[in-house]
Length: 431
Image (cartoon, rainbow, N blue to C red):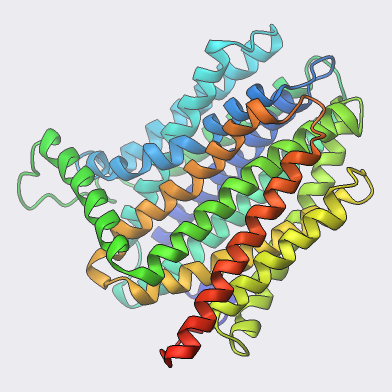
């Protein structure tokens, strides 16, 4: 069935609709909140962000998803999940209002970042509880459909929320209450999600504890041991190891590119404020279009060439695009560079996902993809962190851009050599 056909099928269940509504409301509010944070941290009038401030913001936005996520299940399997949804949403609503109040009084120090960090960390518990609750609200025969459509729908809701938040931020202009209004709107969305969760009964979503769960300390140790097992398993599978090393290197470069783009639109291409936010949003839109193009092109391309050749082609093209569209540091050309980097990023990611899935044993797949998730976000933040010492506040650095292009070219060459070596030995290559 199609995506919309699957969605229509699972929406026939009233209990699923209640859980689904809670998800959509919360993830829409997530998008609004993140748009408010981005607009304030990166494009506040009279404040031209330094590389260090941008890197710190990325760490707050991304690291909770990687560091808290693997351990969230330890608690989700002990607490009533409806209560997790309720209190997570209420906590996020309160924290969003606190964040709005701090912005209104121009307090953007430790308390502001702590409140933002707590919102995004609590969200990991909310999302984990949603995933664990799904089997309780859909029949077994439609569970696969539900698993296919709900995360995608949630992502769409987040993008819609981000668009709504950005629109509200542009509507209010550079006024002092612009960002607080966006954050308060996010708080209202979180409160609405809390109300929606009350349509479900307290124990309706589990957990069904047939036996006493292991002690908390032992459960946390098991999670850490599982991550170590996943790392060892990947290291023993050469194709998967190369694939993860490539996505890690690409995310490192992508982190530097993103930070550089933010600084350029905030401090060089514009005077910052709403104009900078609008320019960066246009570049982000171009990158999103590139992500879509990469996702569409990759299945077509890998029917006509090996995955190794396609990855090499993407990385080589990305290197050339950085030189052609990025090196002039022109506001007119930078969206083209953003589009090209988006195509490369998503095309390589789809290819890497497939390589990892094919070359990792099913018994280790969950642990390996948890490691993948941590690597994906962690190296993005590491790239942004390195930029704090190599990228000037203007964002203009020909040497850094040349180094990124050289890094992509070297990875492209490595995959080309691997593809030719496999062809010479007659070893089958994945498509």
